Structure formats: structure tokens, C-alpha cells
Image 1 (cartoon, rainbow, N blue to C red):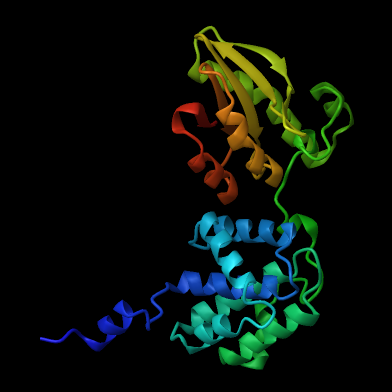
Image 2 (image 1 turned 180 degrees about the horizontal axis):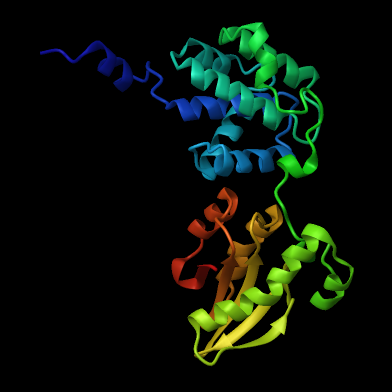
Length: 290
């Protein structure tokens, strides 16, 4: 008996078997890359969508698709053709355009190349013109407010511009959300120590670690049971800096046998931070939610 036609096409690579979520991701990335860059603000916006929309894709998948699509720029002929010929639900098409507009306005207004690509995809997906306004974010085609798309990060931990004072110096001038992030750095190491180590003590606060030409800051050093833990605190909604994600694998590899990286957090990890922890040796990392 011969194999069904659809199966043969799939086996021969002639059939696009990607899920609707991956089609949504491609739509988002095409708009993001239309101006020639995948900016940090746009990357932050995609991470927020994975958590908040939610968009059911992994962060490594985002990176691999962005790299592949970037090679097709500026026309994205094959990728656009693949999107437009696929049969996928009208609900998913509208969701794709809504999320693409959200990411496309991150950091800069949705205009010129990005706006043109978004409109052409809407036309190709046969979404009627009267519905398009409803698919735009509250700020329309304009620039997205920074706090609406960017991930929250503490300037105390910025590896590009390391804070030169102590934690208490930073606390003295912090206000609003910045103060909230710093206050978590005061309480979280104590809570972590009481949960995970006997007779533990905090031996240092805000240590700067050197790695090559860069520096990483841990919020506290906790010692107990013959172990030394370098504690990095993430308050609710906070993420690591992109440079931290690059530098930590090398730093962890250089640790002594009794040293560990401890991530202590209030809420779920953002996808890029989770991808980092998945990359690190499990026996060298403590991941604790309080």
C-alpha cells in the first residue's frame, strides 16, 4: 500500500509542519528584522510575550529563527511566501499581527520598513483593513513606552557600567522600582541561607567578580556547610543583563569545587535567563524561588 500523499510530502520536506505558534513567531520576527536589526528593546519585548502573551516558543528557538530570517533580509522572500501559503486559523493570524506590532514599536516607531512589512503581511493574510487598527497596541504606530516593552533590570548589576559604590550607597539614592529591586537584594540572601544551608552567614554584599575585561556583580556571598554561594537576586519581573548571560558560563566554569552560583528570585524566570540556567551544569547552580 502506498503512503498517503500528505505523509510523502512531509517526509520529502515539501510540507510545512510548523505549529501555529511558530508561524506567529515568524511574523513577529519578520517585522522586528525589517529595519535591519533585532534590537535589545525588541528582544526584551519578545521575552515578555513568551511569558505574558503567552507565546509557546523557547528562547533558543527565537535566536535560531532570528538568525535564519536575518539571512533573508531585506526581502524575506521565502519566509513570507511560506507564511502566506500556509493554512492557519484567522484567530492566529490576528494574534500574529497584534504581537508583531507590539514588538515592532519597541525602541522606535513602527514606520518605514517595519510598518510596510506589517501592512503587506496583513494584506497577504487577508485581514480586512477595518480590523487592523484594533490589532495595534494602545500607542498605535508610535514608539512604545519603555516600561511597556523593556525588561526590568537593576543598574546595580549592570556589567557594562558597574556601580562603584556599596549596596547601601545605591539604596540611599534609589526611588520607586529601583528601590524595590535593591530591597530584595537585602532580604533574599538571608532567606536563601535559612532555607538551604545550616549555620550559614553572609560574608560579603555586592561583590564584583572579574572575568577577562568585564566585571560581574553578585549581590551577596553566603558561606556554610563548607560551601561558598555567589548569590544573584532577581526581584519579581527582573531579568539578567544580556551581557551577564554571555559571561556567566565562563565564570561558572572557573569556580572552585565548593563554589556555586545561586539565583534567588521572587517570580518565574524570563526565557533568556532560563536558557542560561539550562546551559549551566546543574550541580554548580542553585535555583531558588522565594
